[in-house]
Image (tube, rainbow, N blue to C red):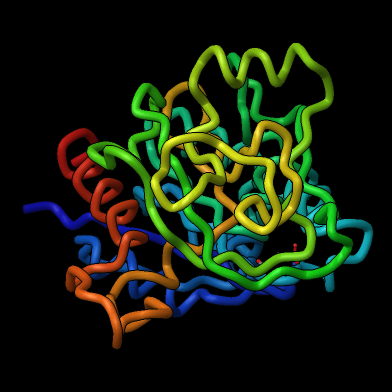
Length: 275
Ligand SMILES: NC(=O)CC[C@H](N)C(=O)O
């Protein structure tokens, strides 16, 4: 059987790369390589050799100029040494080959600021949405209930019927669109794959702290129209085993944490469609 390979990009202030690689392996990837962005820009590591790209959380460039903004500009314009190619050409080829990208927290911020999400009509370079300062004005660190949209094209949430419970930790998680038309299209095409909700996963909520940042339409996660690119503010790699749950000593919980489902779905999709 052919190997399925995930890559996790690190450097310039990312974190959680070890957890992300661990989640990929637990989810079913044969390999999960952690590569520094400098190895990609030097041409030593090529995105073409992987099926699943992970953009992790963190504090890229210390969140200066707004979270992930400097890195978004850097990655949009940087060339890959020795190839005559820009990095965005590698990204575009990766996306065009039907591969998967998951951005978590700072990685989600990077995806929207590069324009990879919502990626309407294959336009991966025009920024239409942003993630900005939480309404409460402070960094938030808590667990949140995320209602899934069963009609969403996201390959990562296939089979999740109601919702998932995950930790979030960010200062700039408030999702905003550039226009009512963008928001309307996101809703119409079911791209808002995860919304903050109450524990019953019934309705999306703007109520703090269930919605920890005041995100427009309570949007916590977004995918592109193909469903192969997705970003979310909470951290799925931080809940892959029940002992990571805040009440694991008091509640009967399944062995696997809710976040693992996203990586399992990614691995299954890659095996079925890409190798
Ligand atoms: N956990 C994270 O990735 C944090 C993202 C970003 N630095 C913020 O505070 O919004």
